[in-house]
Length: 292
Image (cartoon, rainbow, N blue to C red):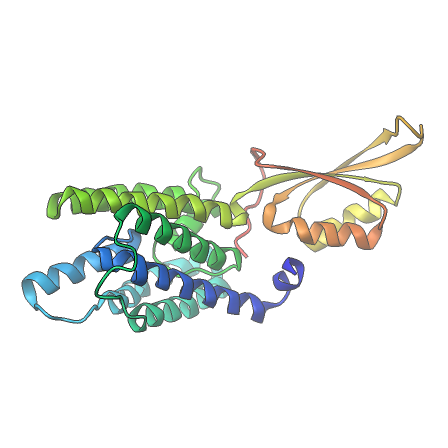
């Protein structure tokens, strides 16, 4: 299923749009009714909306979605250089759908979950799943995701989730000054939960090492992996302790998002190959972090 989705651009885009809907639902159904702030660029837009509603134009409708779309225009122009036209086009689509979902999905007047901690956790988990799904499909809803992706692509120690936490530390410090401590604290809990879930769902952030044991032509299999995945391959000769027969061992470092494609590629070359993976390895040096 994942392999088919990975190679079907239309399906990937549809799943990304679904992710924007999940994110908008999480925010409007759980966070907005509790008068909390989501963080990131949307959190800034929500903060501006609150200041407008309370001081400049009381009774104004929720304009955070419109502000978010407008704020993304200069960010997307900057992203053309680092992330390429394809990702920017997909980001525009997801930013528009996210802004539409956020503006159309009504926030209940009475919170669905009155307990602040429960609402924060539910909203954070759903938002993290939705945002991670968008990123894993090679798309983005704009805002801080774009900046996080640029840092990730350049090999920075920041992941998208970590960059989000750093930015929001400043944002919630402002909320602490302007509003009650409870609003800032529960907003932080929500955003921290969201960032943790996002980093787990966004599989490009999870590096893995795969060892392939095969009796097929290791040169042909290595070239096939390089052509299909664009990853380097190292191989050496091994010996089976039980059979005392020679075997080829191939080592590949890749992201978790690419594992199913690797399995598919290896199985095509040798259905009897034995493959092991190790998750969460630390990779240094010349390792490309793919964004789509």
